[in-house]
Image (cartoon, rainbow, N blue to C red):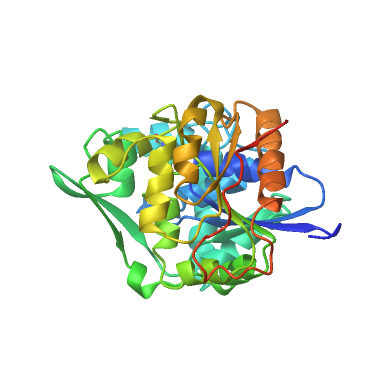
Length: 341
Ligand code: FO1
């Protein structure tokens, strides 16, 4: 990377992904593309709803609800209350301003626009300069097998507060979907690729399940780094920790490294873990990853920007661009990089 703009492509799911993307968007001389999971999408009240895309959109627009991380701030719930009076479903709460997004998306899709087109239009309307890229323009629907059978993602995640053990995950329609041309371009032209601290099973994993996505990542000369979604054995948000227990692996920073090393071999060059997990760094290095140890819980916008900056600086020390990724990650793990030292 010369002193020109650094092109950063972030793979993201919901709230954690949006926060890291927001941090990157605040950095100077960075051109950001966010590849967003669409497996959580649903149809409700006849509306096409794309929760992870909207969470990234609202966060980058500075309009997100800070408490929940999803939906819009200063939201009102009149439509929601009226839906309840009619006996319509209210388990998935839609605020009045949020509904406007779903109405516009539904009308544009019905007119033949792609999710990529619609997202670009919504982002432009909200003054978002970064590229927000749905991972695919064909529908993919994540399903979770529980002791009560197969459930749609949102039914499990929101309807049942992800209380059921996830026994198996399926990405319905993924075999017929492909990364969009915009996603492939964002990966091929990236100076840095980052996996946000999103759920490795149902957010990052969904994106990586797209036919052609892994080979696109293996072909890019950009270093690929991931931020751990697990700190001190617990998910920063959501069910990722429990999913390791039921789907295989260990809910720890090392477990995240083992997950990527075994299920997505050769992709990651570096892993960013929290200071609380520093003791696991040598074992993670032995898997072939370079490790950055820093504070990775993003409590406010300053944290988001700091972590994003540290992650980019760390990525710049990895895998010179000319080394094609087809060779297994053989780089010398070297010492543990520590932010700020
Ligand atoms: N999450 C909840 O826990 N409860 C909700 O009622 C809810 C509504 C909702 C509406 C729009 C939207 O974009 C997201 C919403 N979410 C809600 C969050 C969403 O279920 C998750 O953030 C993602 O699917 C996880 O990646």
